[in-house]
Image 1 (spheres, rainbow, N blue to C red):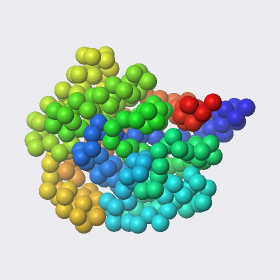
Image 2 (tube, helix red, strand yellow):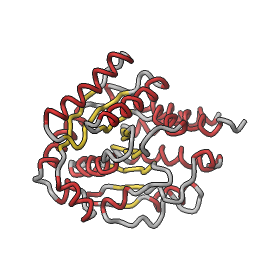
Image 3 (cartoon, rainbow, N blue to C red):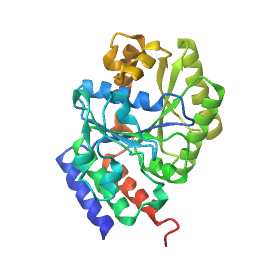
Image 4 (cartoon, one colour):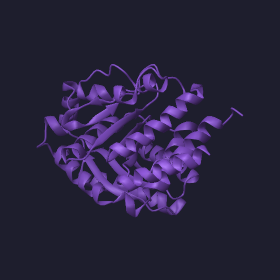
Length: 291
C-alpha cells in the first residue's frame, strides 16, 4: 500500500510539472576535483536561471559548503534524525544555488534507522518537486550502499583525470554500476587535463573501454584544463566560475554545461518511473540484513 501511495503522489507531482533531473557526480578515486566540479557545475546551471540544489552524500567527509566559504549550521544528519525540517538544512549560495551539507558526524548508512530512510525518501520527493536539478556529490570509490543509491539516480557524471590509475578506477566505478543497471546513462569528463589532446585521449580511452568490454555507450561531456585559478579560488573559498569567469576553465565549463543541458533527461528516462525506482531502491538498502 505504501508503494501505491508513493506512486500516486509522484503522479500528482508529475501532473503539476516536470520533476527535477537527478544527477550523481562520482569518481573512482579521490583527488580528481569531483566536489569542486560539482560546485562549479551547479553554479553555472544556477547562473543560467535553473533551480539547483547540491546534496552532499560524502558520508562523514562532507565539505561542499567550504568551497563557497559558508558555514552549514545544520546538515543532512540533523534532518534524518528528525531534529530539523528539510527547509532548515537547505542553505543558500550565490545565484540562488542551494546546498545540503552531509555533516561530519554522519555515520555509515548501515547504522541508519528505519525512520531515517523514510525521511530521506520524503526529502528526495520534495527536492524533485521543487528543483530543476538535484546534484548528488558522492564520496569517492564504491560501497554497497552508494552503488544501490547510484543505481536509482537518473544520470551519472564520472570524473577522471589523465592518470592511468584514475582512468582504471573510473572504469571500475562505471562497471560496478553497469552490472546493477545496464540502462544507466553515463557522462564522462576528464578533469585537470594538461592539454586539449590529453583530455580527448582520456575520454576516448574510457569510452572505448566501456564499449569494448561492456558493450555500453557513454556520452563524452568534454574536459577541463589544469588551471592555476582553481587552486586560487579554493583558497579564496569562491567558486572559480564566479571568481574568474574569463579564465579558460570557466569558459570551457560554460560549454560543457550547455552540452549537458541539451541532453534532455526526457529522452533518456521517464522522470516519474525513475523516481519510483529510486524510492524502491532506497527501501531495499534498509531491508538488507535487517529481516
